[in-house]
Amino acid sequence: GLILLPLSVIVTQHRMATARADTERETLQRVVHSATGTAIIATGRDGRIVLFNPGAEAMLGYLADEVIGELPDSFHPREELRRQASRLRALPNFSDICRASVAAGESNQLWRFRRKDGEERTMRMTLTAVPGDRGELTGYLATAEDVTEREDAQRALLLTLEHQRTAVERLREL
Image 1 (cartoon, helix red, strand yellow):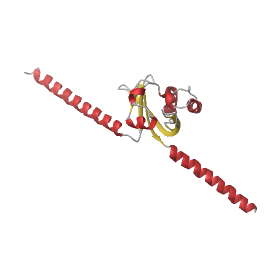
Image 2 (cartoon, one colour):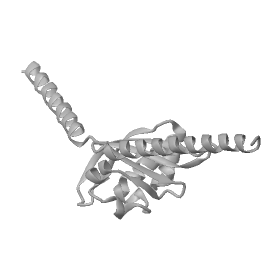
Image 3 (cartoon, rainbow, N blue to C red):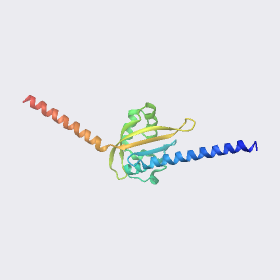
Image 4 (cartoon, helix red, strand yellow):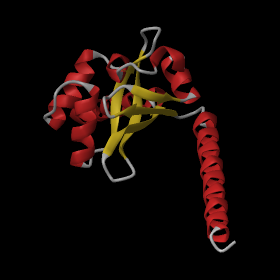
């Protein structure tokens, strides 16, 4: 009895910890899958996609089954990868850009992306390194929001302001 009692306590504690971990995992999965207005994409250590939520499906036009296991480079025009890589002095592929971006502390940037239908748009993307149990890098997490309309409106506003400045200067000259 003295041997079985501690063993029973350990087994009970293990079952409770497992149940808590399962509940937390299920909660996290519900949160990720219910974030339909935000694209959430995770890559593994090898740079390949391991998570692609419904928000990413809506924003990029791909189903998760089509992209799991693929590299996210195809979501970005080649010139965008070169631009981001040049800014960070990295190789022009998504994995190396993620590594350099997180290392430089520049995790929140505007990116051009290409939908499955070929339409190019602008996203505000936040990149985060995903640590493992021992602190080792296990991949990257990208969360993104399509800001195309907002950026277009801002450019139009700036262009309008510049036209107004030019008009005011011409009126002063007259």
